[in-house]
Structures are given as C-alpha cells and as structure tokens.
Image (cartoon, rainbow, N blue to C red):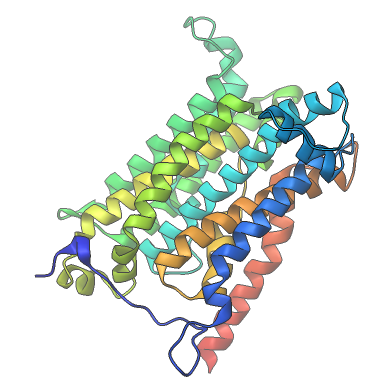
Length: 368
C-alpha cells in the first residue's frame, strides 16, 4: 500500500491546452485572485460615509508603520480607518475565507459541487443558540452569574459544535461515518433547529424579535481587532490542513473505496473535514451571524475556472471568498446609505441566481 502522506492524485482540469501545458486561466488564477483581494480591501478601507482617497489610505497605513507618503489626512480619518473600517474589512475577508474553506471541504466530502457547510448543522445550531441567548438570556444569565457581553458568540459557537456533534453521532454506524446518513441527519436536525428558532421568535418581544431577525441576516459591524485576531487564529489551521491534505481530498472525489486503496485514511479525513468546517464556520457565524451562499458559490466558481484539483482549489477558494464577502459588505453599507443592509441579504441576492444557474447547468449537462 502506498504511503498516504506522499499520495498525489492528478485530476483533469477543464482548462488544459492540447499540448499538455496548463492554460492561462488555471496558471494565473491564484495570483489574479490575490491581486483582486488587495484591490477590494483597499477600496473597502476608503469607501463609506466619510470618503477617504486611496492615497490617504496608503498614507495612513504607511504612517502606522513609521513611513511617510505625500498625502495629508486628519485624525478623524485615521480613527475611522484604523478602528472602524480596518477591523471590519479584515473580519469580512477572514469570514469569507472560512466559509469558502468550509464549502470546499464539504463539497469534497459529499462529492457534490452543490454541497454547503450548513449541511452538517453548524449554521442552524449556532442560530438557535444565539436566538435562545437573545430571548431568554437576559432573564437566566444574570441569575447564573454569567457575563452577557460575549454570551451570544460563545453560545452560537457551542450551539454549532453541539448540533454538528449530534449529526456526526447519528451518521456514525458500523465504525464509520456514512456520508449519506450525514446528509440526511443534517437535513433533519437543521429543520429541527430552525423550528426551535421559530418557537423562540413567537415568545420574543419586539426588540428581541428584531435582534434575532437581524442576526439571522448577518453583519460585519459587531467585531473589533480582538475578533479579527481570534478568527485569524482559527482559520489559518483550517487552511493549512486543507492545503496539506489536498491530495487526500482529490482521492475522495474518486470514491471512498478507491481512496482507501490509494492509502488514504478515509474515516480520519471525513472526521477532520467535518470538525474543521465546524471550527471555521462556527467561529465565523458566532460573530457575524448567518451569511449564506459564500461557501457554495466561491468554491464552485474556482472549480469552473481552474478545475477540481484541490491543490489549487483550496487556496483559490479562500482568496475568492475573502474577496466576495468584503465586496458584498461595501455594497451593503453604501447602496442605501445611511441605512446598512444586512450582509446576509446581499449575499442571498447575489448567490440565489447563481445557485439557480448551477442547477440549470447541471440539468442540461445530464440531459446531454
């Protein structure tokens, strides 16, 4: 049996020229996405109720590390950029990367390009826990002597973990995790979780109802630099594992039996993929609320552009997700200014038509 750590599985890409060399879109995908990410982050720092030019943004950032550039700026612009926009845009990039990584892992695990991190229950578990803290927390938490400042993100993270663990427990039969059972258990427990949210919304007062509804649509405005650093510490290990085990993920696309014959520890990979998705997605939505479609759309766009090889797909999907979510946030806070749209609403408006296009595309492909 081959050494699984040295396993290399080559998958055919859609963009390969006849002479065998990689085509330009595939070869330049990651660098182009990195440049696009930098441009979106720079634009996000300057666009807002207080416009800050690109030169001023660069001058403020350079001045923060001891360099001087020939653009003047005010203390107000420095405060807005460094303490409001910068942490928000960084959180958006990390959240988008985390959701995209979760989507790429779930699509590899289910061997389905339409899979989504929500399938394992992390989103509904986090949502019902956050709703419970919003509705009953003000009454119960003080009696238990617990702080309420970070109660919602902590509860959301633990809720996502608990429901994911329950999904895995139900799907674990005869010493292995059945992917089909994982899907069915996720669908059933997701439905139960959102039913629980409905019950909590029925007993909530008007203020609590608005808070639950707003959290379920997502926002990047609740975090600061401490949240950004926490997300960075949680997302980087997920990215490292996903890139390192990309050949194993490639092998899974061939089928579990074929992957096992190639020396891949299939059960360990499935368990790690679910748990790491729970870490990345659970940490993200515990601070941002529910944000849909990014985990579905970003990996699939990358797959269309660069093929299914996870050695390219993983970093490219993380970069694209880190670009799409800040871009959606710029749209959310400027299109109806001074009113800020929930970012989950924007991603749904962007991702819904794309999802329908994917379904129609798959139907036409099957009909051929």
